[in-house]
Length: 417
Ligand code: EPZ
Image (cartoon, rainbow, N blue to C red):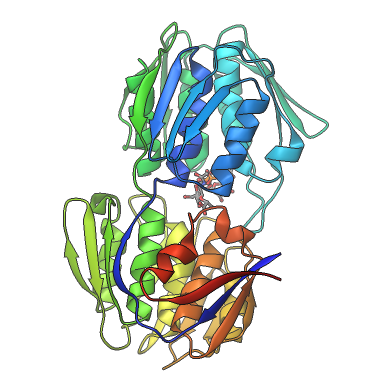
C-alpha cells in the first residue's frame, strides 16, 4: 500500500499544466466501439481509471496503441461483448461500454458496477432508457444482458440528471433507427466533449450542453481524431491548494469557461484571480473567507469540488455550510479532516464548517477519489507532517499529483508502506 508523506505549511508557487479530463476521456474511449475505423485521441490522461478502461476494451478485442497522452483505438475486430465483473468492480464507468456494444453489435453483457464509497450509484436510468430504445434487457447473476437487432429512436426523459446515463444513452441513439430526444440531459462539459467527438465520427447530434439533446441515428460511424478537454476538477483542486497555502499558482491548459461557478466561489473566498483564454492565476494572502456551497448538476457548483471546498472552509475566517445534493454519502473526508483539527458538524446532507486558524499534521486515510484530494490539500496547509494512506484512490483521478505539487514547492513524497 502506498502513502504520501507531506510536510505542510509551505506556500505553493509556480506554474503547472492540467491534464486531460478523466470524465471526458472515459466515455470517449468507450465510443471507439461504435466504429470499425481508427479513433485517434490526444490529451488522454495517464490515470488508473483510464488504464482500466483500456484494459477492458483490449479484452473485447479493441486494438489499443498508446504513446504518452496519444491513444489510437480500433474496434474493427471485436471478439467479445462482455465487460467482466473483475474489471467493472474496480471502475464503475465501465458501464459506459453497455450502450455502444448494443448499438453496434446488438448485444452486450456488462457486469453491474455495484455500489461505491460515495453511494449506491444505481444504473437504472441507463437500463430504462435502453429498454425505451427497443432493447430487451435483463439482470442475470449480477450482469446486465441486453439484446437488440437494431435500436429504435425514442423520446427519453430521465428521472434525474445523470452524467454517464446521458452519455450512455447518446451512444445508444447515434446508430438507432430514427430520432431520439433526451430530456433532463446532463449539461456537463464532459458530455459536450463526448458529443463533439461523436459528431466528428459522423453522428448527428444537437442540443448538447442544454437539457434537451436530439440525436438522428445514422447507419454507421467513421473514424475521427479528437483532443480531450482539460480536467476542470484537477484544475479546481490546484486552485484550492493555492488558496489554502496562501500561494501564487498559474494553472495552464485549462478551460476557464467550464469553471465559472468555481472561479466565482474562489473570488468570494478572497482569492485574487487573473483569467486568460486557457489559464488561470490564483493568488492568496491571509486566511480565506468562508464560502457556502450547494452541489447541483452543471452549470451549478460541481459535486466533484465539494470535498476540496470543505478543506478551504476548514481554514476560513468564519462558518460555512456545505450541502451535498447529488450523492448520499459524500462526507467521508469529514472525520479525516477532523483528525487534522478541523471543526465540522454534519446535519443530514449539510456540513457546517467552523474555520480554524491552522490545522496540524496527522495520519489520515483516503476513502474516495475527491476526498483523497481534499486530504492532500489539507495536509499541504497543515503545520507539521501528515501521512495520507490508501492513495490508490487519488491515483484513479489525478495524474502524478505529487510530482505536480512538488514542482510548486510542496514537500511531498510517495512511499511504500
Ligand atoms: C459522473 O458519475 C462522474 N463520473 C462523477 O465523477 C460525478 O461525481 C458525477 O457524474 C456527478 O457529476 C464519471 O463521469 C465517470 P450521475 P455518474 O449518474 O454518472 C443517481 C469523480 O470523482 N443515479 O450523474 O455515475 C446517482 O446515484 C466521479 O470523478 C441513479 O439513481 O453520476 C446520483 O445520486 C465521482 N440512477 C445522481 O443520480 C442512475 O441510473 C447523479 O449521478 C444514474 C444515476
